[in-house]
Length: 81
Image (cartoon, rainbow, N blue to C red; front, side):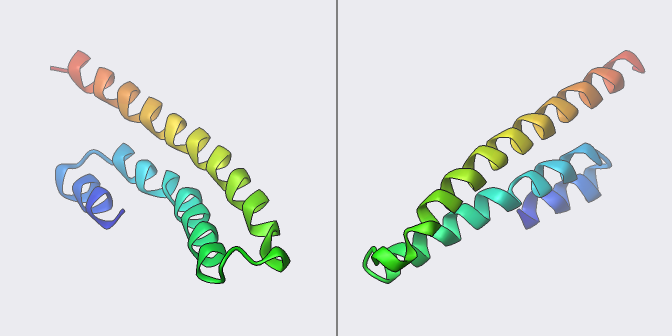
């Protein structure tokens, strides 16, 4: 995530920073999965499975939107050349 953010800053392609923000829900979902497995799939933590699923869907949507923004900004840059 930090590398994507730094690429956006150094290259001047600010839309790449959105990709870094789009990764945040996916990171939350990964933390949910790791926590659940760390505690040996405890039944009391099964809510984490649903939370992981929700964060994965949200993360996929935000990554899709961020990728579209990168595509759109690259098209605008190519038209200006």
